[in-house]
Length: 364
Image 1 (cartoon, rainbow, N blue to C red):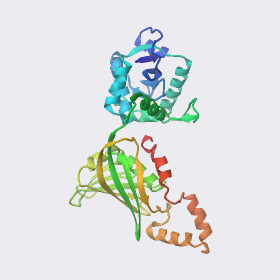
Image 2: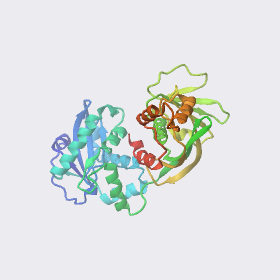
Image 3: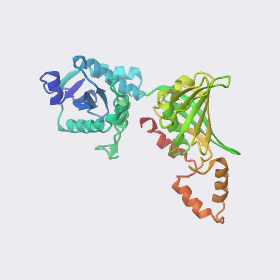
């Protein structure tokens, strides 16, 4: 495997490199050293698909073990894409031992510089406590880039997927997933969605999935309540924007980005989700089953029924009044209500649209 290093990285390593001999772009990565938040940061990008990763807070001892850190960084970023471990190891074995060289030309340097700019833009996502930067890496790989292909623009993770589909010659993605039934209480009506998602997500990500599934706009506070098999609330999960209040006795309060869903799917927990404490939209989340081998790395809505109300409609009673008006073109408030609903993105449930939006939801 060839690692093409910029002059700045060569100087940091104190070595003089020659041009490399590897011709397969998939087995070549370009690396540049930048300073972000006063810490040395290594940005590494694959020459074939521009998929990359970020190592932040590099110290002298880390540069001495650079081979190990780069190899583990490649493992980490590919695992985050839910690529099977055996395929990752096959890739590393086929690529061979790491060989450092000069960068492989102006094209690779230009791509690398663009990736570094992306990292600098999202410098607030860098965690000084760890070397491999999961969030910054995600930002790096969701930058829409111009390609020479007919589509014109693609994401690095899409290009990586195409490369590994060709490299592996078989299904290369697999992860544990959970099958969820989510029911929205609308009084005399119910809207529901059945969703399969990789299970290794936070409650913040689950919130984002539900928002897309029900066409909400994520413009209000929300929270999850988790009940044990005896019906006792054992955890209140809130957003980072909510003011923490004194919880009931024996009920913990945690921020949604700090709680993982897998902790609460293998037991008989009951999960409720409330969106917009004014309109008070209550959702019941039912764990239907666990799936050991899920061949996607993003959520999919399998089926659903019913429309979600528009934002700020006034709760269940307001929604019932809204439906009465919008179903009667002769009503004196029909035209104003119709225009207002359009401004609120109110539309019929469209499973294809939901799934297009869900495909990228875990990358935000």
